Amino acid sequence: MASARISRFPAEPASNEKLLDDFRFHALLPDEEWGRLPLATWRRFSKRLADGKTVVYVGEIDEACFSRIGWWLAQVARVIGGPLPTVAETQVPMIVAVTEDAASRGQIWTRVYARRHGFPQVIHSSKRFAGPTGLEEYVGYGVSMALRISVEHEALLFRSVGYAVQIGRLRLPLPEWLTPGDLTVTHADLGGGAFRFSLEIVHPRFGPLIRQSAVFREAAS
Image 1 (cartoon, one colour):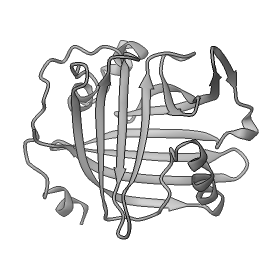
Image 2 (image 1 turned 30 degrees about the vertical axis):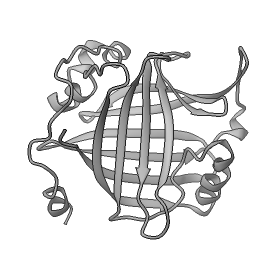
Image 3 (image 1 turned 90 degrees about the vertical axis):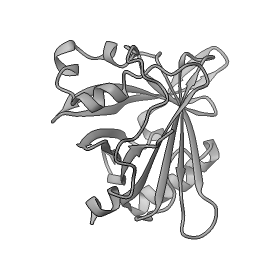
Image 4 (image 1 turned 120 degrees about the horizontal axis):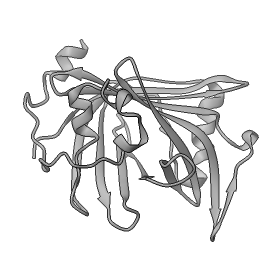
């Protein structure tokens, strides 16, 4: 069933940028690890967009589940802009747009989750090449999450290694009891221009809270 859904996308997605000269993600990994990535993944994360330019990926959610605590976490997180998916719907479209941000020298990620009823949910975050690990995700309201990347089974993984809140010039680490737990985002190439993007949050005490997975292709320009 999944392969049938994927076939609706263009067979040869086009890119609005051809130069593969963005070394920011590569610089966060040893050359040996970077070399284990599939060529298609290497290309996606080596694409330098001009300031303000956007690349769009279109896909479909094929897995979504919440524990009871995870569902409440997603609802409470709305007070800081709603950085987590709030419904467990599958077989619905999802769009991810990545825009180069000249101000932060990072990337703005916009995720649009379609719903069967009501307006889509839109999540904005910024990946900034800063912080204690060299990469952090800023979700707004001063809240950011340090990320460490690695390669496992030819997939690129982003793992949270600490949360912080920025108040003016003061950066304060959040205590563990104020965080959702360990977040892992996995980018796995599926071949033929498709890739899987999955999100998982696991709390050290309450176990798995949220899991979501979707299959994407780059939209033709």
